[in-house]
Image (cartoon, rainbow, N blue to C red; front, side, top):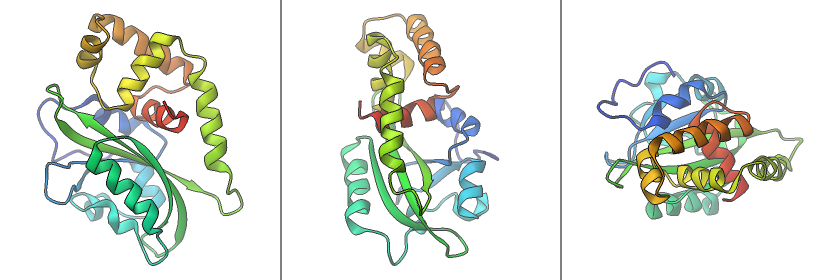
Length: 207
């Protein structure tokens, strides 16, 4: 992620973590008109062929085109409206017009008061020769989640619902330090070092 010029104040931890993700990831702000992108990582720019200044400030629908499936875009729209995580698989287009199949994960992020603050979205290009990659990733994610303790699973589920450490501690009646300890352990078990990728695994696993 080159910069986050338009974000200030007490930032959600996922905002910082997307820079470390090898998965193309973006963050949008639903409190601004048309839910524009406010942060993208380098992997997203590499995937789509756009420069950062061409995408920040725009709604992510610029990736759509003539063959983008209406049913799948509606699935994403409803998830935004209902503030819930989801995964959709649809045709998108790169800057040069190249068509690609995109497995999009979308999840809400809430502020300390429980108000919707951002949406994080990640994309995985599905090779034309491998239509089963989404199913395979779901199976792999489920296997990873199965390695977690019940408490770690609870914490991951709340992370996927967009809650911060302080909020998770309150819901589970734990100290913030204990939640942070479990987060580090679950990151290790999920073979990731950042919250953005952990959230995608949670959504892929269906928890």
